[in-house]
Length: 112
Length: 115
Picture 1: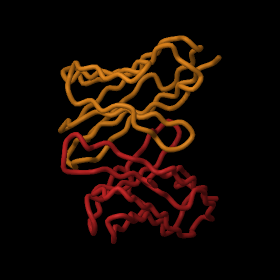
Picture 2 (picture 1 turned 135 degrees about the vertical axis):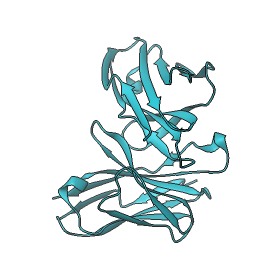
Picture 3 (picture 1 turned 30 degrees about the vertical axis):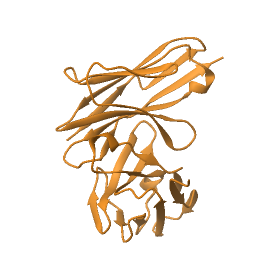
């Protein structure tokens, strides 16, 4: 059975800090790994990673995948209070194409 | 551009009552999903559908039924609600057929409380 584990489960930082969120996975048939940000309501898409070692960036957020070691990290630099959210990692793969298996999520709180 | 729309947004049920959650998407996506989200558990897949007229069980299907009579709609039913089904329910859809299109788009969620 596919498994996705995120760490830490929660993190409290101050504005300006840099954070690294971790996601490890065990899957039978890897296709891609996705990161989502969830604030009050629906998760919103951040990144999709399919190739090992290639960093995806969007402003202060970046993510990289290591397919050999089966993990991904999400970095946020110069954090702002608006970065406070649940960050979800998901694997797309397994026996059912398109089905996402989510980790537990990391709750990030950024204090002013 | 509506995307994925869930109704209702909130609902309180008594134990034993039944209800149906409706999910509608206007992106012509083949795949649709129902997830539940509980504190510390992430999103867990209840049922999913790979196309009109087809459904399959996910990780936590017990106590739920689904139907996909039309491509754009995916219904989640609770026949006899239990307090353990108190949760936030998310519907999602994705375009199948290409490895780069497994991004799922989510609805705004339904907060269900069973008392």
